Image 1 (cartoon, rainbow, N blue to C red):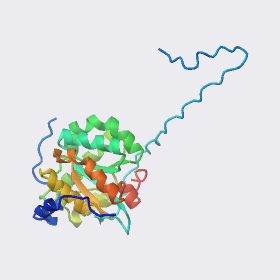
Image 2 (image 1 turned 90 degrees about the horizontal axis):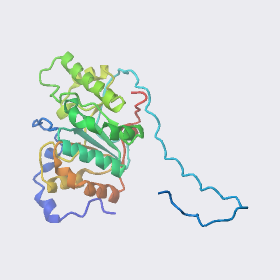
Image 3 (image 1 turned 180 degrees about the vertical axis):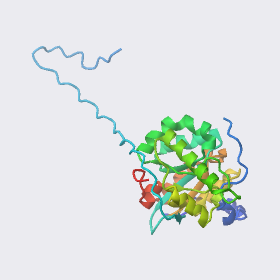
Image 4 (image 1 turned 90 degrees about the vertical axis):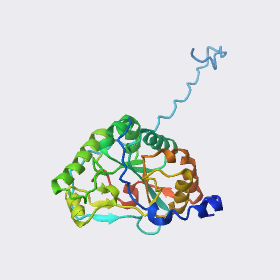
Length: 286
């Protein structure tokens, strides 16, 4: 089976200038403000001496397990991760930010329709966009298909001369919003905005219970607005076994490409999973 979607060769050659370095950049610094009559079957039976057989009851729909109580923080030494451990066909689709209402709605619909596991790391600064989808996302969180990570409330660069207290407040405010909106903790998963972090920042979030600092080793390259051809070429390049794939719910280029992403996953026999499944963490433990 081919490892690549059958893209136009001329397209791929023309996109070599994008480069892996551009593809692997984090969130760009151009964030915008979010816009914000009963049936008659069987009625001909007239026999009065024979008892009728009741129709079998329909099997009840499976109910996902209730969310566990939100655990307290478990501070510890942080570990930076960027790819799946070991040899695996698993991938983790991780989608950040969410300031574009149309793109967030598209990702939510994609998750609900496709049943593909996704980890969202939204910023509470865009809560007006995300809150309207809470009723849809909560059941997916309960079922273990969707996971929520912490990406800070404000999406400010953590290395831009910020005081420790300001960093802690930014992370904790986002956690409070995640708990109240989605009914789950984001711990122990933290993705620093722009991928900007150092040992000091890692230690700070580790003290708050964020002992997994999440980076990535593949990207849709959509932290800024790109063309569908560019995004599709990067998807083809980076959707490989073991990839932690970075995307953003900020620009609507992806909306016409979900079928292509699904096709790549199916052709390459990849297994999309949440971070909890990939790394053995748990919402019940936090």
